[in-house]
Length: 271
Image 1 (cartoon, one colour):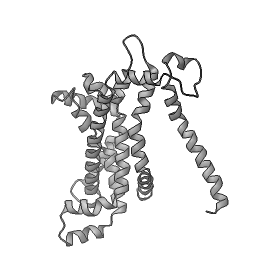
Image 2 (cartoon, one colour):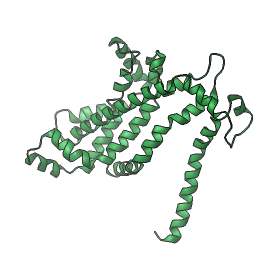
Image 3 (cartoon, one colour):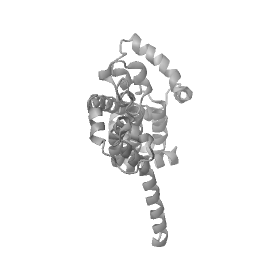
Image 4 (cartoon, one colour):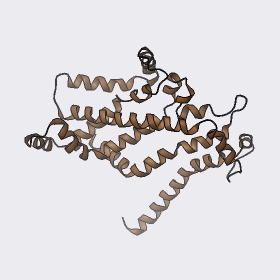
């Protein structure tokens, strides 16, 4: 691509990037006003109520909810990515009885609405005595059909059978082949899946709403929905809390955006 073509392309991308940042800027600006001012017109410049809104958030143990979300999201994401990669490796590179039936059964669960599956999950957790704890939020998404499908497709197209056979000839175990040969090859797909799972877990609202009643166990989405007093809903504080809650997501996507694009492109081509 020559310079004459590059300039308008870069300008177009720069304009799109600025447009994409406008909602985030508006979210920060709205978090600097008192709630009643939000109904008096469009606010383009920051107000002077930022410290008061920040105090309102801190008075309700926001950092505790932040820690709960971080704890749940990190453990859930690492577990879900590991299980998805291992299962995808098995479906992509091993032949066993009932393989196709089991694979299509897993894919079929993608058609079941999440709300329908949640009913059985809640009953199961209450039977096991795990309701009103953080454990259901961690183990709830470990078995992810989309992750299995994603990894199966990626490993099928990215990992040649020859290097697996050469690993076996060198005396490497199956787990050794997975960690030493397969994981380095599928790193873009692993990072992509990690970002997607972390985002889903961080923004999960429905499962904590149904299973968590103790305020000290609230996660960020649940805590933001309850910000305010008994007689007043503090929308500005909620918006500021939303802005603060996006920080881990922005950091992760900032570090992993290159791998995310590579993983999505690789998956779309080879899938």
